[in-house]
Length: 67
Image 1 (cartoon, rainbow, N blue to C red):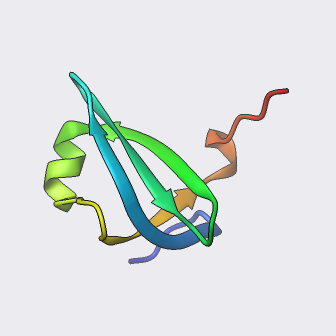
Image 2: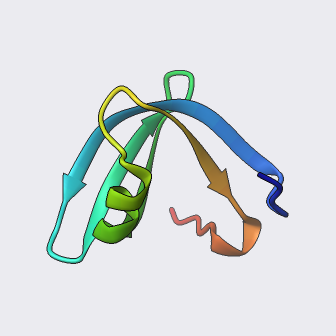
């Protein structure tokens, strides 16, 4: 798979919390947990489950920081 994003962090799925339309997928990337909100359909298409190897792909235009 080729992508334009340069920030690809490999890790393990530690939780998948399904909501009405979207799910929160939590990935442990070396002791840091990254949470992504994706559609329930995407979770099904990827067959995501706890313990799976997965990548968090972060594109700069989709990262927000607050304090």
